[in-house]
Amino acid sequence: MTDTITDADVELSAPASASGLTSRDRTALGLLLAAVFVVFLNETMMAVALPRIQESLHIDATRGQWLTTAFALTMAVVIPITGWLMQRLRTRTVFTVAMSSFAAGTVIAALSPVFETLVVGRVVQAVGTAIMMPLMMTTVMTIVPADERGRIMGRVSIVMSVAPAVGPIVSGALIQVLPWQGLFWVMLPIALTMLVIGMRRVPNVSETRRVRLDTASVILAALAFSSLVFGLSQIGAAAVGEAAVQPWVPIVFGLVALGVFGWRQLVLQRTDAALLDLRTFRSRDFAVSVAMMSVAMVSLFGAFIVLPQFARYTLGLDPLWVGAILLPGGLLMGLAGPPVGRLYDRFGPRPLVIPGSIGLAVALFTFAFALGEGSSWIVLLGAHITLMLSLAFLFTPAFSSSLGSLPPQLYSHGSATIATLQQVAGAAGTAIFVALYATGVAATGNVNPDLPSPAAAAAGSHLAFLAGGILSLVVVALALFVRKAPATDVH
Image 1 (cartoon, rainbow, N blue to C red):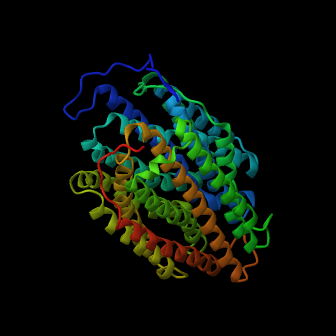
Image 2 (cartoon, rainbow, N blue to C red):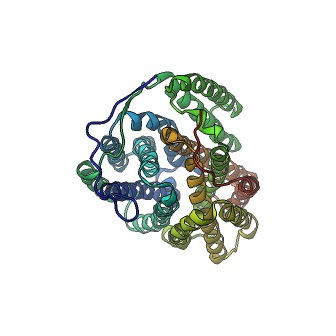
Image 3 (cartoon, rainbow, N blue to C red):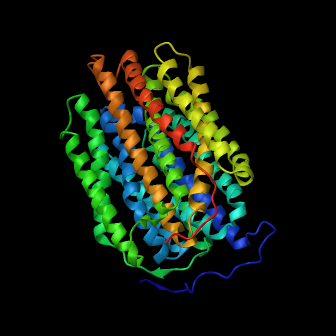
């Protein structure tokens, strides 16, 4: 059993406002939202810049995807630890650790002379990013009354969508006038500023507990997730004859490690010592919502990695134009966030997630069948706007429904589980879509994988987007079972 102790440094509550939040709570939410915006902006700046980095470092898409896959994979490994971290340390301390790691990784990436060092910098950045999102979600669930969570989640969705919207066009503009290292030099002073402000202003809004970190669980999680994603990435490498190992070997090993990890959590949660408490999945609403989000993330991350490749090599667009095309969809998703949150508070999730899932399917099948050589960028723009608006109707209700169905003692585990599965799904989506893209390119007989012909890039994109469209049908089916349920105790 764990011993609960009141954190002596948890700050006294200020008078509550009419909304039910104290001034201290509003300060905490504002700073955390700003920090999440910064780390999300960094994460999404890479997609548009990736083709230019590949050309500069003379690598193909199969190797280049590790800049995003390693980032997502690191987050998947670190995020489970955040459940323990947020119970053991104060809010301000956790924030400081996260932003310090992010800033250090940014420096390493900016100074990188070769591809391998750049990957290391991205990994260190990802450690900080991994901590920040669960910290914000757990804080929201801790301090925001249940009847206001939809509205606050709407604000969260603005951050989660505006940053990806602004990231590509900022990246495209910078990459036009600066070497790729400039992306990180521009980000560094922003990260340092957030670190300094947060160290002084982020309040401590939770209590700490003496909990033990199970090292074996951390190792098992790292082995499971890294093996699965590495195996998936080798499918694409095998398509061009560069696989280091047969893909099925690490995939099987990863599945076995994942099974052992799950068994160990079931044992440890009897004494509240699990790295990820799987009792969260005893909530039917949590399980369904998380499954829907995970499948959607596979399609989403995969589409985001392939779209710039298609726009660059098939349509011949410069990075700035690619960013400009992706901007409206992201901004509209951000604007839709607050209304969707209010609609969730009033009507629940199902009237929102069902049309959202259908829109996701329409967008991905449009990418698969309406885009090719000679396509207009207007088609790409319209499909991307449909994709982003559909995601606005999916993610805000799914976040609120999943965490809202849990008892307070499982909030940190629930948010860590969601974030972990999102990143595993994102890394898997990136690996799968790049594998299919590489397979399609290779099937055309393209002789230079570093610089695919327009026809080769179109063929690879079609294959990847078709897989995404098929996966989106699973999202439609799961959306039919999402519901809003009151939080109940999970034993």
